[in-house]
Length: 85
Image (cartoon, rainbow, N blue to C red; front, side, top):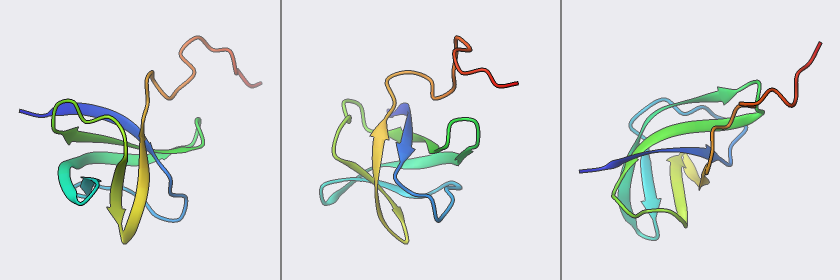
């Protein structure tokens, strides 16, 4: 069984689709299910299925290994604090 996580990928020069490996150290701990550039958030975001309990030290393979940071809350502005005209 896996856990579905949402994270921010340290990448601005490539996109995430699906099937990219999620690494922790030297081992594969999951796989990306989908991803996109969050234009409203300015972040490269992904959903991934990972082994339960995985939280830190993650990377995604996008040609090179890129840092993956789990998001503790939704990436968008849920309370509309940053509205634009």
